Image (cartoon, rainbow, N blue to C red; front, side):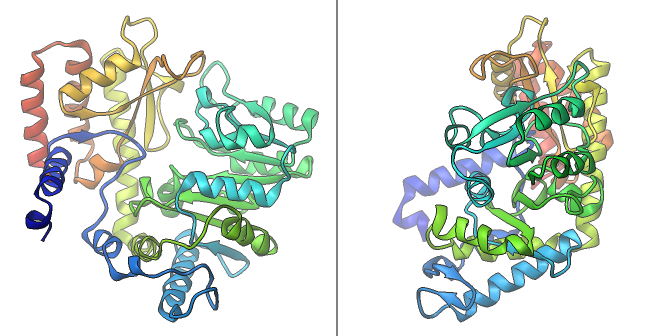
Length: 405
């Protein structure tokens, strides 16, 4: 038992469990996995090495791991409503390695790619200068218009001007519905591959709460945490014609052997995602995000794009005298966990003007729209320091106990 063998580490485990139990987690990329997923992550599959793919391994003793991976692929197709014309690679360690592998499969170093700018809502792996994607490829970036919505006219103009090999659509801090059909038409018009990164919205796509990228994309990447509510990991889904390129890019391109316990846990989470209960959960995630954003706007907070269609939104604190970093710190002292984030127009990620908020974890706790109004008041109290922080913290912990993990 860890309690006896390493009491210091056991204490930290207990402290982290208590922290999660007694804080409100508003980070959109975090969620709370089921006991089954945690059991799978801690299983004996962590002991096995499995370089290669089912029935084509470089180690013996992998017949059971093959079954797990094949079952996971079938479940992924079921979750997203796909047929056998789509291939699923279960092995990416996480989202960033998956995006790197996808780009390596679809383009050569030095080729032009297009992606959303970091300050506009995009991810580091969509072409930011400090990331591999920005160093290995010639990057053309697009963004949002003055209302905070993706500027599809700009995307089309840039694509025609620069003729990219790959167009990346998807975001890490964008709250509106993504028009995958429009992206698909633009990519097709310039003979580019379309890579859809649905890491944040995969659960919403599965439940029908967000349009699907699959009719229009060549490759779809998703993490398996966030709204999918699985382990920290990644999936690459591609049209069958790209199977060899994608698989080769993952292994041996950017990875060695897969983490079999993670693959097992992904399959467990995908099984959970096939249920009616999971779809109902996603419906509540979206409604809760809209309710929380609306309540905060009623408290005179500005929201980028004026609201949300998804599970997240950005508070825009410009003009308030409070930075995103200060707001994050005030919230954390009160037991509310939300991350500072750039908003469109910010010049440096080190001095962001916003705070990113989402409702996946709160919804997993069982909260509904009525509770979002209470959460909004607690957020307002903390950021504007309307009450002593200890009093706010007490109310946060009381709410957490009411909706216990």
